[in-house]
Length: 266
Length: 268
Image 1 (cartoon, chains in turn cyan, brown):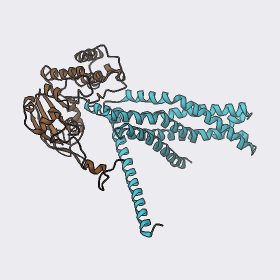
Image 2: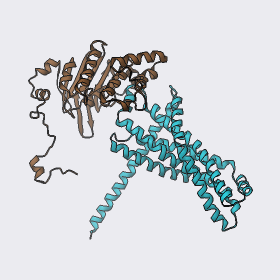
Image 3: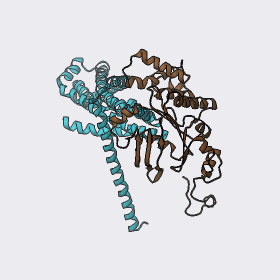
Image 4: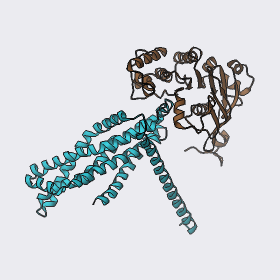
């Protein structure tokens, strides 16, 4: 049995550990903010990095296209199935089109799209920059008077920020088409009702909200993944740890930010 | 060309460099030698301004590099080149593009001129014809030579070499050493070489700086080092395990560790 003094000592240790973790987390958030702000400042400096933005958008965007299409298709199909059996209980199958459209456009498109981007591109961004650190490529850039913030970090933040809304648009279109196939062709929902309800209930704001979310999520993924790679411990284990951390932190941050943004848009 | 004044660098409680005062003369090959962990690479990175000192100052042509603005530092780096220990070639670029990289970034030369310069630099390091290979396809020696070509692509005034011959076969090491000699004697560049390869270092050096535990223990010409009667210098250049420079870094007695006596450090 622990006596009172031992219990107090354990409590103090636990609180001390929690305090240290909080301080370290705040320090990392500050460091990441400074790193991204310094990198973003290069948007307004010459030489313009436009060519590198396009190359990164191409690499991240085209590379994530197939996974985004597959995820979009199956999300739309599952939503149509689940929505049909729920709505059928109330005799409201005709609302399936609007229900699926609102879910995909406002929530599932941006969130699942961002999670797919993290898995497909975010982890590779962290690993790539981490390996550049391990193999002294970042130092080599410095020695060639090329700023890694402008050349390595900024193009990747811009790429994730601009690519995600485009990928989410593709996700949305494929998801809606897949839900139409399942709802109308397989489950027998009236085509006119499916599309009519969709057109009637979905307003432009739903689209804008989805795109804005995708823009914010893309920026957040870019900032976190580049930061984790840039500050990775220069060892193979350090890069592996940074990559795992980048995926976990980005995913959780996306879900938290989604709640915050949704509460503003509703 | 480059000099340091009371230069010190600490990592936490560990002192990597302690009150180092050196002077690198132009058009000379200065070789920094010392055992593992003596502070050689830290000193090189400080001279190249890749790290900041804890105290002291570094001057490049009488201009302080400590606290220098980034824009000015990048202007000065146009006069510097560096060959890293593991070459640090950009993995996504071919041999040609790696060597052309600084030229494309910092000059407005057209492609024809860049191609000519790159061909000349690759010929200089014996790798003409390997332009289309990727860094992952190169051996260690070839990668070092490409890094060498990239470092001299802009014809810098000073080139830093971090362990240029480590991990190379004797032929490749000899080729690299000869290239450093040519660079200094024929091209009149200033070379600063960090190495623990005693023979290669002494062969190419105009000036040798010997470090031990973060301090300069001797400097002078290669002959002065060879003829030194300092026991630490002799032990280092002859590679003897016994002497004033301890091989073992352990602070506790071996017997105490084996007997698990209290106060000794445990592994794991």
